[in-house]
Image (cartoon, rainbow, N blue to C red; front, side, top):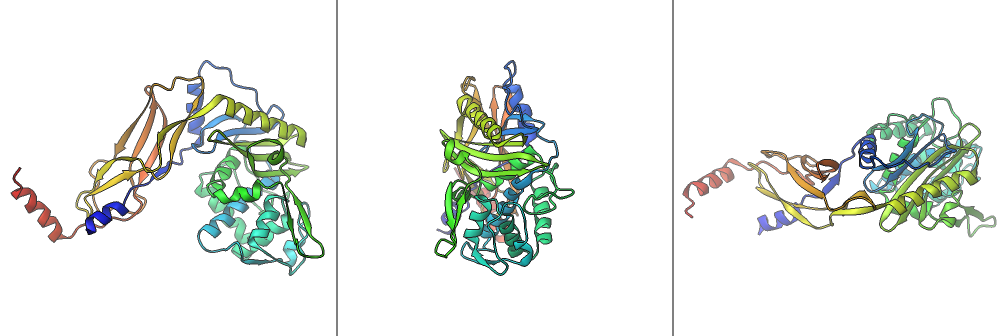
Length: 396
């Protein structure tokens, strides 16, 4: 009974490999060989179009140029906030007190007063919709005790995500020395933020209120007008300073695809919104998903030598797919399960057990890691002895 229960509980969930996105760009260009690249984001200094599910880059233009990101910086601020909530360090109902320093922030704000308290939920509205510089600093101080401590967390998280083009000097994007990012890095941060599905409740709302029941209610209108004027857009963040010009990281969903488009250095809001819309139009008209596994599909088992558990069933923890051109040949898509040889206990939590490799013909187009969701202890000598003797005396 215990073995059956253990075998049921210890199913291996697939975890997507965080492949260097630059690698996907190369693969995408190979699959599009012979085709003319689209002219997208012509007015932007830098741009990228990415599939949020697979991380595949559809289009890029100067995507690794280090540029001032303005208020797009707040995508990282929101990410750290959502991760603190996910880790149980913070609740949406927790009160956030505004310091004099937070209240002193200029630029876009929700006009917090020193000593004023709002819930984490309200602060997220103020950051996501109104791009509140004051709300961003108040949240940073709530999480880390100071903006400086929070900025250190921002840079540490950027390093964990493998970002090479980013360094933060503050949590809100106000002009500062040594504060920069790239379209590529912003897309990666945006993709990570979108793993917290509830964030689009904030980034995708067009209007709302703060201090609704007070004498001075504050009307919020999303700075990202595409959430109203482009069907399927539900985030993420606008930005503007005189140095950075007009910036946007946006996301949209259509026909099961989620796109992320980032533009930096646009000349005005009209051009910014128009060029991001064109990027979405291109992706949704030209690409579709090719399913590989559905959540819950059993793919096989992996043997664990000398473990308390001798086999682990391989079960997909979510839907897995690859991005394909609609005009491409989808009949030659195949995948292989490639397991590490001689897996031996103890197996660590998160240890790589192997990969699912997806090919189009002979070309690899995607790789997924299989990781153990738990630690598997080494079996005791008595258990191993019984297994050995059972093999010796087994008669077919």
